[in-house]
Length: 172
Image 1 (tube, rainbow, N blue to C red):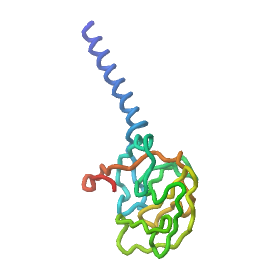
Image 2 (cartoon, rainbow, N blue to C red; image 1 turned 60 degrees about the horizontal axis):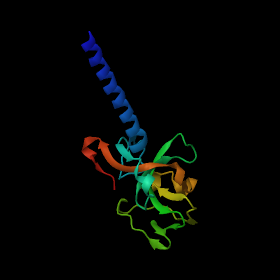
Image 3 (cartoon, rainbow, N blue to C red; image 1 turned 60 degrees about the vertical axis):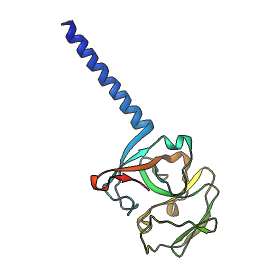
């Protein structure tokens, strides 16, 4: 009888440790997310499942070009995903479907060839904020609509598509 108790106690201990580790990993290191819309096409498609690294931005700031997940500023219960186009202190302007930061075209190889989108700005990105846009510029609610993204809303960096398996790969 004593042997069964110790086996049960060991099993219970293993389960508790596994739950604690899974919780720590999910809340502090990596988290899966589901892509519900086409605002990031062609980089991400509706139905993609991705992994977000929540640790990266504890040690560094998001950079231009990073794809990030964040709490939507107008409804923090919703998570959004967009690409960082400019950081605090930079001036953003869109002319002739080209994004300029501080007067220089940034070049965006991840956008579909021939994509045409409206002019915007110029606007300056406030302190502790980011200017974010979807890659599918004509189907994206982003900083052009609701303004700069506050730094405290950033959840993490999108790093990997893990589902569907045919789209498995790093997010660039």
